[in-house]
Length: 392
Image 1 (spheres, rainbow, N blue to C red):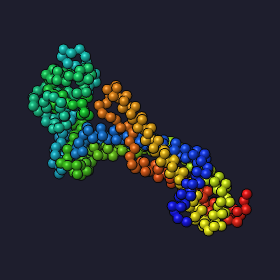
Image 2 (image 1 turned 180 degrees about the horizontal axis):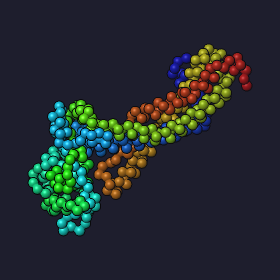
Image 3 (image 1 turned 90 degrees about the vertical axis):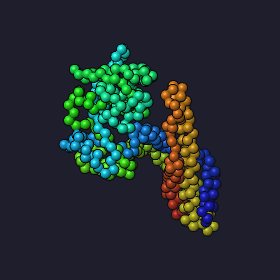
C-alpha cells in the first residue's frame, strides 16, 4: 500500500465520524494555542530584555567586582596590572557613594538617597552626554547629572541646569558642585550624579575602588581578558555572560509558561487514544475486509497511525494559527494603550512567534497524535481477518 494512499484513506475516515474527530481536534487545538501563545510571550519578553541590555553597554566591556570570599582588592595595583594585559584597551575605576540628600541652590525641591558615582577625570565613553562637557574639560568641584535624575525635580529642560550649583550632603559632610554636563537617559547610570574621583576622597578615605570597567580591544578578546581577571580572584561580568544568563532564565520561564499547554495536550492525547479505540471497534468488519483483500498488518497499522497523526497535525496547525491571531490582537491592544498614554515611542513586540516555535508546536502535536494512536493501530493490525469478518 502506497504511503500517500494511506494518508488520504486516513483523512477520509476522519470525515466519516466528523463530530468525534472535531471534538478531538479541538482538544489538541486548545493545547497548542496555549503552548504557542505562552511560549511566544516568553520569547517576546526575552527579546525585549536582551535588546535593552545591549543598549546600556558595549560587547567589549567587562565589569569587574571584588568577591566576598577573596582578599583581592580593586586598588591601584590591580588597575595597573589590568592595563598591561594583552587585549585591554583601557581600565576605568569608579567609587560609589550614597548622598543623604541632593538639592540645587535656589530650587525648592530636594532628592533623597541619591547615588553618586566618582569616576576618573577622563572616563572615556562611559558617559554619553546630551549636553555640556566631560569632567576632564574642567577642574575643581564639578559634576555631571544623569538625565533621569533631573526628573526628581520635575524638569524636562536639562540645559537649564548647566552652571547651577548642586548641593550633596553625606551625614556631616557636604559637597557643592557646579553642573557641567547631562548624561543621556539611555545610559544605565543616568539616575545618579557623577563626580571626579578626587572629590570622593573628600567624603571618605578611598582604599580600593568599588568597581572597574575593563574595555577589551575587540569582542574576540573578551573571553581571554575575563579569564585573566578571574584568575586574579576577582569577579568579571561581561555583557555576553549576562545575556547568556538572562536567556537561560527565560528558557525556564518559557518552559513554565508552556507547561499549561503541555498538560492540556497530555489530556488531549487520552482523547485521541479513546477516539482511535472506538474507531477500531466500529470498523472491525472493514479491517477484516481489508485483510481479506490483501492488506498486510503493516498496512492496517499505517492507516490507523496516520489517521491519529492527522488529528494531531490538523489540531496543531489550527492551534498555532489561533495562537497567532490571539497574540496579534493582544499586541495591537497593548500598543494602542501605550500610544494613548504616551508610554512608548515605538511598537512593542510582547509576543514573538518564531519559525522554530511554529514548526516545533505542529511537529509535537503530530508526533503526540501518532504516539497516542499507535496502540489502537497496533491492536487493529493484530485482528484475525476471519474473526473480524464474522463480527456484526
